[in-house]
Each structure stands twice: as C-alpha cells, then as structure tokens.
Image 1 (tube, one colour):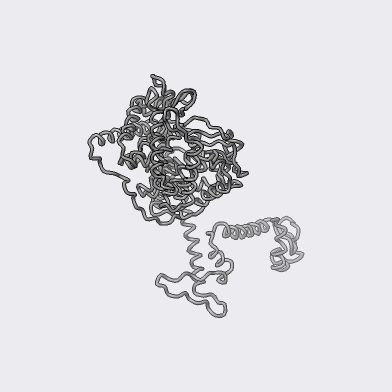
Image 2 (cartoon, rainbow, N blue to C red; image 1 turned 90 degrees about the horizontal axis):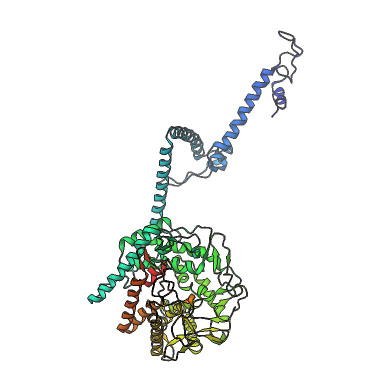
Length: 612
C-alpha cells in the first residue's frame, strides 16, 4: 500500500503540528521546507510504513498459521459468542450453562487460555520440525533412504494390523469349515500310494512356478520363466490364487501360508488394463472365494469383494448383459471383435452366477446377485430356437446373434452353473432348476447322437445343421448329467446317470485313440472316423481337466472302479509326456510319437486337473 494513502489517517488523529512542528515554523539545519499537518519527514514516513507492515503481517500470520480450528478462530475473532460448549468432563457432569446477560462463560475464558496454549504448541512443533530437518540434512543419503524404508514398513504393518482387526464395511459371517475339506488317509495302500503321487506332482508344479515365475500369472516350464496372458491385463498371480484351494485340500500347509502372504501383500487390482471378465471371475474371484470357505481367512473375503466391485461396471449395458472385456480402471467395456456382431458370449456371462451370489452373501451388498439374476430375466424373455441357447447375445439389442449352439467352448459352463446354482441353494432355486432341465431336454433331442460304432457324443448346432464334432471342453457334460440325475424330472434319474456314463466312455476313447493317451482339443464323428481329431489345429492338449472331472463324478456317484483306473491312466500319460524339469507343459500334437511342448503350465492344471 503506498505510504501517501496512510497519511490522512495519522494527520487527522494527531491534529495540526503534532508531528511536523508549529505551523509555518522555520527549517532547521539547511532550510528544509516547512512541514504542514499532512507532511512528514522521510524517516517518519519510513517508520510509519514499517509499523503498518508489521500490523498487516501479524493479521495474516494469525489467519494462515494458526491451527485450522473453527473453535479457536471464533474465540480469537468473535469472542465467546461463536464458541461451542465444551464436551462434558470425564466424570459425566453436566456442562456449565452460559452466563446471563451474554457475558463470557467460564468456558470462554478457558477457550482463550486454550488459544494461547495452542500458539505455544504450534511454536514448539515448529521448533521441533526445524531440529529434525537439521538432523536429517546431516545424515548420509544411505541413512535417509533406510529411514524412509523403515517408516514405510511401519505404515504397512499398522495398516495390516487395522485390517486384521476387522473388515470395515463387511458384515460379520460365522465361519464353518465344510465337511470333507481335509480328508483322512485311504485305507487301501494302493490308493494311498497313488494319492501321494498326485500330491508330489502338485509339489513339482508349484515349486517350479515358485522358483521361476513367482508372482507372475503362469509358468513357462521349458523356458523356465514367467508367462502372462493378456486375459488378466496387469493383474498378476493367477497361479497362486487359482491353486489356493488345492494347496489347502492337499494339506500343503507351508505352501498355502506363503500363498496367503503373497495375496495379502501383493495382490493388486488397481491397474489400468483391460481384462477378461470371465477369466478373472473364475480364476481370481472363484479362487479367493474357495480359499475363504475352506480356511476362513478374512483376507480372501476382502480381496474377493474388492475385485467383485471392480467388475461391476461390465454390467453397464442397455440390457445388463455384461461386456466380455473391461478396463477395470476406467470402467469402459467392449466385446471380442470376432464375436457375432459385437455379441457377449453365453459361457462368459453365464459363468458369473455362483461367484456373484456368494459376493452378495459375504459383502451384504445385494447388487452382485441382482446383476446375475437380471441375466436370467433377459434370457427368459427370449425365444429359444428349438429350446436351445445360442452362444451369442447382443448386450445392446438383447437379441441373439448367430444361431450357433455348443455344449463345449462358448456355451459349456452356462449349463453347469444353472445346475450348481440350484444345488448351491439347497435345491430352492426353482428357476435355475427349470432352466437347466429344460435345456438338457433340448440338448438330448437336438444335439446328442450315437455313432455307428456305438459312441454317444454331443454335436454342435449351427443354424439348424449339425456339425458332428465334440470338444474336450464338452466332456465335462458327462459329470454334469450324472450330478444332476437326482433331480431329473419324470423318474429320469437312471437315464441321466447312463447318459453321463456314455459321455465318459466316449471321452475316454478320445484319449485312448491317441499315441500319447491324452485327448485332443476336439474330435470328430464324420468321414469314417470316430472320436479322432482330423484337423491339425485340434490335435493339441493344454493340460485340460474336463475328462478327468467326468471320471471323478462318475466314480463318486457309481463307485465303478473303471473310472479310477481311467483317471490313473491319464496321470501316467501326464507324467510320461507333459512332465519336464521345470514343471508341466501342454502338447502340440497328441497323435505324434515325439513330444512337442507348448511351454505353458496353465493355472487350471494346479487348480482343477490335479485336484480332481
């Protein structure tokens, strides 16, 4: 502010001649001009400017450097009128009432004293901060970095401690370990020996993953390095999360503990990347939920719910049918460019139901279950060609895409989840039950055929025409038919068991008719061949579990020993042709006498194939 603008304030206050001498007085020492009432010597002006600057600095300093406390500021600037009554003393005595006549209560005086105390504390804190800064500057760079690391570790430990104390926002859930989570040793010595062998296979796969690819998604056992599929975006640790339940069931306690610690410290979903909603759901959400229900460890529940919340934007479509791909940071979704005019895929959006219903139960948030129940509403409004569900559904129009029906790839697990949703509900989900058995009826009528050699298979349906091909993925259906036999309508229980047995036999033949006794990706029933792959791009085996899964269900439900034997044949073939020094690898051609490995140990090999 210019000094001249200050002068009238002081001149009018002091009166004429108060600072400049008598009016019209002479000049001292050199004949300076006489000073009138509104004029000062240069030194006096400078003094006035300093005084006013100090006053302004004090005011602004009080505003910007006092604690950000509305109570303190109101006490300084507005006295006691704006002060809130103090809290009651620890003994619970009532607060002192305000004094009559608007005078300051004793609390106001206390607040004023508190304000002075606050200024003292600010000064002390400031001095301490200066001392610490000086001490830090005197340290070597290595010591400063060490101190920073220690502070970070302390913060992480404190955060973990708070997390262990409870799960904010999540309801309390009483944990009951499921029956049979950890079994007893078999009485039969031969079975015990085989069981120990499979556990050793799991340890070989896990140890090599840990040695060469720890924290990455999968292992390349020939190259002995990590392998990351773009299905998971930048989310890492697919093998760790996927294998948690197998480690627990096999009582590999140390391995389970280190896997849990990795999940707790390193599993991070805050990534800017596009992921497959289906793959992340079944491997990460499913893996975390399984681990929680087996162990009761709270970290798995919290991580599952956290990831489920990040998947919710995939459902932001006109119909609520989710996108196949989602950027989990931006929430932007899309579908595979090759999928019938921008359609979503039946096996992908139909394989969310089990996990999302559990997420609602464990989080107390109904939105997860509402999203998947809406999928059913959309499907039930649509006409089904011949009662069949096509593999493609447009999420914008809500109409079917290309009329391609498969119980293998693109369709398979939709049917599995209908049945398991009914079973999981303790058989109260009547809608899921009806959808499943109606679908099985249509499948049996239009897709299931018998070859001239007597092998029952499930063909694919394309616009009303059958393609006499069956995929390895389709082989899960044998176990599914047997599992659902108990609830089959019209006394068809025996028929569904028999149907499961026939599919199991066909899939066993697809293994038995190869050189390596491992099944191809797909096999055909035309051109004079049965249960054999005729195209080069269908001859590979990537450690898939579906055939062994059907053997397991058939053994459990019938106790026919041939299913155990067929399973053991598959184990021997895996050991002979897929085991390598660095783990287990898929095979490019199961009809070749010489192994050509694909150099990928899939996460589902540990979570499904070996567990079954």
